[in-house]
Amino acid sequence: MVVHGWYTCPKCHKGIQKVTGNTVLYGTPVYCRKCRREWWPTIFMGQEITGNLPEFKMK
View: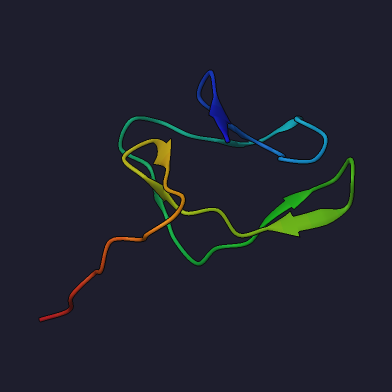
């Protein structure tokens, strides 16, 4: 979940990763030090994508 420019931990709601308007994060683990869990968010253009993911085609 992205709140005020930070990806926050879904469990404890602590800001753990800075997100800007052009941030793309896919297949990268993000670790929360507070609750000691690892999350794998999909962020495209500063917003978290849930549900059906877009297909990235390589040429």
